Length: 221
Image (cartoon, rainbow, N blue to C red; front, side, top):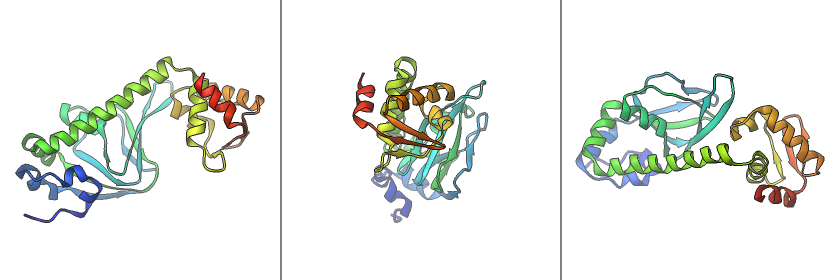
């Protein structure tokens, strides 16, 4: 039996698979390195490789006709891209776009190898559909938050969750709007209200938390 490729250490579930179909194709995985800010795929692109991230992060987002962006999810170390999975299973093109947020080290399985493993390896199918189910649940929660959640609650919660140890976030109002799936004007207006109430301090490209207790209260309303 051949030794496990080193990249499998990032995917314990795949490393544990010992059935013949998976052992036959796992060495077909190709290593790739992408710089920060690189487009991984665009809406309408065809899909021919199963993507597994070893290091770094890829942001998957949707752009509306009006130009508004929403972050659907991120693919980070030890994760696969479920949009890629969906496209490969359904033979469809991408309906969103993805770009690297940092330098990304990854492996890709060519379509033929992916299909062979999916058809012949119970362990690989479990890995693929487990990741798919988990991400779909997260997407449903995102839809619920965007559709029914109050923007002040979601904004306060995001600020508390993503501020660094000094209580700061380095991002623009446009970037924050993209994260929350709303318009920049809505975010700017709400941040101005938070600032008026002494909850945050605003500067160009920076938000500093001033009253965490008040933000926590806003997030819990």
